[in-house]
Length: 360
Ligand SMILES: Nc1ncnc2c1ncn2[C@@H]1O[C@H](COP(=O)(O)OP(=O)(O)O)[C@@H](O)[C@H]1O
Ligand SMILES: [Mg+2]
Image (cartoon, rainbow, N blue to C red):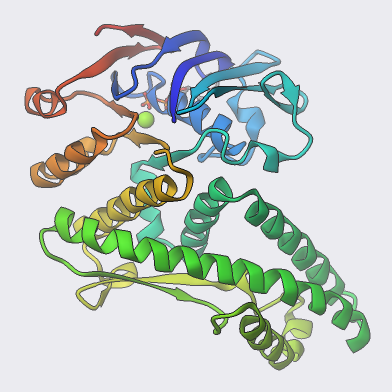
């Protein structure tokens, strides 16, 4: 799929911008603080319903204004969709002119994969970042997963609230049954994702890193089938019940899970060099592109925010080879003549003070 048109108004530092994008590589070039990341953020917002930078969408409205708009026309192999986001006192999302009632309806309409310097956090930071990575990929792939995860989080927050009120075992049991049911689904789906992703990421990583062997392992409740995972979760919940009551928080479940990421047997989460971590994050993102393509038949749109300049020449070249197959939106302060030559055909835009002008 690809984005044909992006129109924004009163979004961050933009009064308005109306951009027609090319189907291949699109370069957005500008100095710092001109609005390049803001553009990608608006696309990401229309893709998953929220900003990757802030949970508070009020921040996205241009200072001094009351409402912000993002409108995106998506073209697919067959047909297309128009997504409109209006941010005011409330957040409204419309697909083809129809307001959606549940955010799940937006999932998968515009599939994107975002890679920015912040995404290094997937490898480097705490497990929360890796769970976010899995969940965003899975939500774009499957509305069912989105709804399962939403239900799980609701049950979890009810249970945590209940823990504070010294509940009886029977009271807790009611929530535990539901927690186990939805939690096992989350774990099973994520584990399936990691298995599929590993198959793709290993080859990509070997290529991009020049020979390292990447390995990914889902760290969570054991078991292959739903019934097995449910069994493990149930046993672990029982074992942790006293502790849960003492601290009024649920210690067991997919909200605690992680992915182990190793290269040649070394745990990159704690022992990877900056370069290794960056390469592994890139491999994961490129593998996610391939996975989404395998699952849905079409490549998502790749958003590369300020990452080209951070990669050494060899990795840059590997990346540029791959992005020729899909629509990519790249931001940066400058792009060298060598990179331009490697890309071949592309559209280019200048970004200055919240204004965009196509220059090629
Ligand atoms: N809500 C807002 N209203 C107006 N300007 C904003 C808002 N949020 C951020 N900005 C401005 O946007 C600019 C940053 O844009 P950004 O896209 O991050 O820049 P870059 O081109 O470096 O990626 C800063 O100048 C910042 O002050
Ligand atoms: Mg930026």
